[in-house]
Length: 305
Image (tube, rainbow, N blue to C red):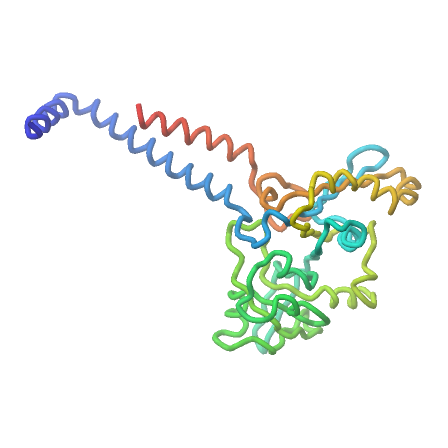
């Protein structure tokens, strides 16, 4: 029976060679397109799902208004919002603020210009729950002149040596002690970070006695993330922010006919929904992903037909 079916199939193919080739090629192209689109879609939708506190960490995004008109939209907004949110709202458990710094790093006779270097709060690894290979997550960024390196950065500057306790010089001036090592952030992260410097050091470099004195609301360029308590309602918290802005900065904003509106963006939404000033890197686009999902479904049904 099977032999007869195969014989009939072979005779059909021989009689309709061109038609058969066109159908097979169409099937191959359709299946290939389906698999490539599916791979792209799954990758885009996987961003920032690996953090330990993904569902509780939000980035504070800032819209600035001038004379009633939207003037700038910041991913890296005002300096003081993180500490003030932590002080005024019990829903906020911890915060992290980050400030980028392109720098010349050196160790011995090894020199490299690095772009993915950030000053950051000491609670970075406890907020994001990203494990350290070496060092203590609660103390690695605490105090002055501390640096935590990615695994690839350790390889670049120290080779196979243990970097812990050794020093990295930045811009030929300040020496930082290596207090931790972390796995390179995966590709599906909205962040691009190779080295983290203690924020207390930044405060000193700009003439402040402590991080607590870095509380300006008119100084932009600082990425701020908040970790909310488990039972916190993010929508309710966000609805309180306009009154909070008026209470903190109402008079100053009124004098300049300006306004500030803050939004709490889930970190898992940043890659597809964020295209503001101060992003770590170029992000994706949700509409594009949804279009490809539609195409993926269309190719799937085409293959079935």
